Amino acid sequence: MDLKISTIYSNTYINKLIYFNHGMVVAKSSVNPVLSPHTAGVLMLKRSTLLLAVTTTLSALMLPTFANADALADIKKAGVIKIAIPQDFPPFGTVGTDLKAQGYDIDVAKLIAQDLGVKLQLVPVTSANRIPYLTTKKVDLVISSLGKNPEREKVIDFVGPYAPFYNGVFGQKNVSVKSAADLAGKTIAVTRGSIEDLELSKVAPSSTTIKRFEDNNSTVSAFYSGQVNLIATGNVVAGTLSKHFSKKPLETKFIIKNSPCYIGLNKGETALQNKLTAIIKTAKGNGQLNRISVQWLGTPLPKQL
Image (cartoon, rainbow, N blue to C red; front, side, top):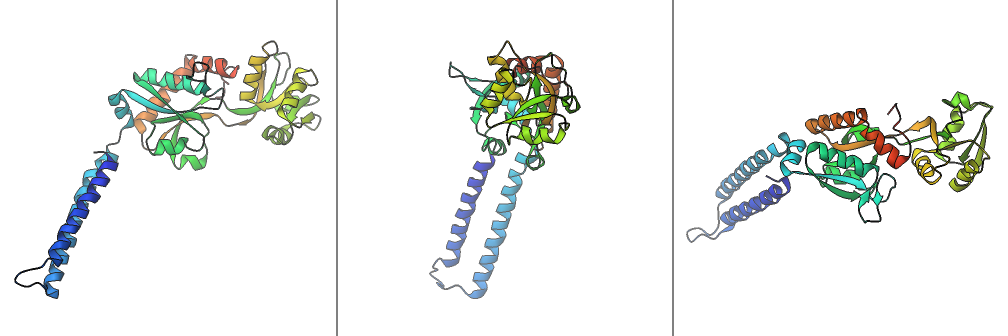
C-alpha cells in the first residue's frame, strides 16, 4: 500500500470514527436527553479505546512498506529506472542541439539502465533539489556530479566514485611533473583567489614561481600564449580546453584536491547498492568509464579513482 495514500485514508477513517462517536456522546435521547457524568465517561473511554485500536491496526498495515522495501526489485518490476541528472553543468550534463540530454552523467545513467535491463527515465535536477528528489523518491538514483561528504552521508548512501572531479596541475606531455615537489624551479599559472590558488600555495616548493591572474580567461591565455607551461585548474576546465585546443592537449600532472563524483541512493537499499557497486567496478575494468571520461573530459580516467 502506498504510504501517502494510506496516511490520507487512515486520517479520513479516524475522523469519521471521531464524528460518529462524538455523535453518540451528544446525541439526544428520547428517554434521557442529558447523559450522566458516569455514562459520558464510559462512552469517552470506549471512544479512546476504539481510536487506539484503529490507529494501531493502520500503523501495523503500513509498516511492511518500510520493512520490505527493495528498490532494486521495484525497479526491475516496473521496468524503469528514474535517474536525476544535471541539466546545465557541461560536460556532466547539458542539452544538445537535438534537445536531448547529453554528457558524462547521462552516459553513466544509460550504462546502468542497460546493465539492469530496464528503460531509463532521465529527470533533470539542480544542485539544490537533487538530494530532496531522491529522499522523496521522485527518483531512484542521483547521478549529477555529486560529491560525498559527512553531512550528506547522514542522509543518503553512495556508490563509486565513477567520475573524476578534482583540482590539479596540468601541462603538455613533454613537461615532466609528477608531484608537487617537481614544481621546484618551474613557473605555473593560476587564477588569483581560486581554490586551486589556495591549495597550490600549500604544496608548492618555495622555488616555484606562481603567476596569479585576475580571471580564468587570463590564466588560460597565459598558458596557451607560452608564458607558462603549467596551469592549475579544475579537471572539467582542462577537459574543455583540450577539446578546443586539440593541438595542445592538457595532461594531468598531479591532483591538488580530489572530490570525485558518486552515485547517490537512499539509505538501506543494500541490494541496489551492491548491484551498482558491481556495475561500476565492471565498467572501470572493461574500459567503459575510461571511454566516457575521454569523450567528455578529454582525459583518461585517473588510475587512483
